[in-house]
Length: 636
Image 1 (cartoon, rainbow, N blue to C red):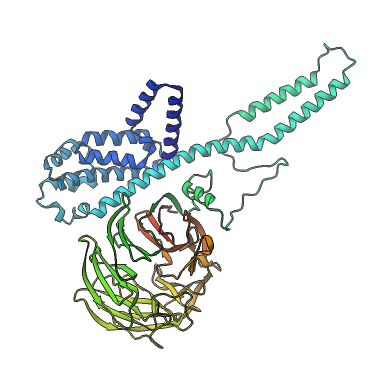
Image 2 (tube, rainbow, N blue to C red):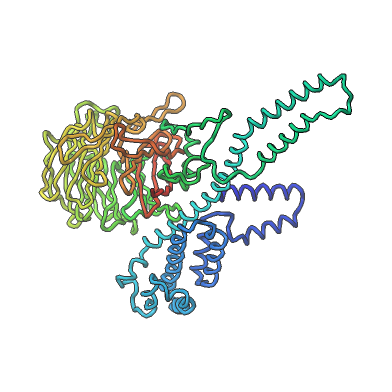
């Protein structure tokens, strides 16, 4: 809606310039500059709120929020009033925390003095009146969460998403009213047109029959039909009834509801539907699980992406391209590069450490793993893994943060770091456990029936289980308390490209070289719970063709699928973006629900970061572009 208002302002400005109305143009610019609604631009509204907070302008903050309440929030249904109140409470707390962090205790006391009458009767503020008198409130268990960066970021994202959906709902309601009026006219129009046709034919017949009659003879049937016509016209253009439960055709039979198609549609229709939050003209559809709020692009890479991962706090992203360039960047509230890492040796894998989350593990093609501090922007350690197995294909950090597993593989039989297509005989490899504190190898896992290259690794939530997918098509599950293999089974014809635990951790999902997406029961070794054949552009190898016969082929290296926060939906790759499916227990394991298009090259790896009701889907492609699609989950 903000972009539409901005375009309209530009058109009006161009018109005034064209007509030479310079005085009116100046008034327009001054009015736009003073516009409290900021042209329905959510980012500018939040910037204005933050300006009041950073300048300790409590009066301006209160007045601006009251204006938004009178102008926008009061139009919402009563069910959303509690959400508005929670956001206002968080906004005031954000202000108070800022005054303490900036050391302006005078403004802290001023807040509680001026707001005492309003807040003292509210339960959520009862404990906050002691805040100005606590020596170190950031260390107090009751208040310490509010001093964290994560709480502030979460609040700002929640406010941003709430306003975005609010503006979308307003535009949808207006459009829906117009659409319902159009549909009413559309369904009444045929009978009206028929009457007009009959009226004209009868008039023509009467005129032919009355040619020999006196011209002043009244035609009473004609007057009667004109009166009926006027009556129908008034009914047609009168206000339609509030509810139209059934649509009837000309024969009076009830028309069946429109069928919902599960077939893929073009990207433009999917985009319009996702941005609108459901089927066109229906507002927020209950059947549409996500609303696509926005899509942004990170374009700092100049070659194909291999890996793209969000850290465990959801604040930073690390992306690696085939040239060995790593970018560490943030996307909230704006996209900003924090660090650039250049490597002389080729890099093949990366993983965020869990504790502390500022550390990044980087696996190379020459048998080394580096531990990089993204805040200090320097290498802390460089570990030599194994000279005979120099390719570090996969890294996974234990949730406890005390160790990580490392998959090391020998060179491909062509002698290259990567060869395409792959040879049918899998190369040898090792799976190692390293201690992050002592920076020493703890043990080497046994890989049966023979040492083989492990392509992908993943821990469960507490680090007690480790699942791996290998080049021989076998999935192996390791007990990390006993450091031994619990079970293994042949999962795919060809290599296993990507493997993850399910939300309840009773199953694991895998994608393999055979193009299948399979769910496995880990309590019954080798038993499939579901299986789905995916298109080739979701599983690889990925192909980018150009002019003059140019062709680039990339084998899968990064994560090929990622789950939402509740494990009910999965994001996969495609030629033009990401595809979101709903997981089901029926014959069809996957049900397509949303397309995140926008890429001009095949997407090769994905990730999904969830926070509160808002999630960010990352899709990275072979042209070096990374799209960030912000989604709002609709709760049923």
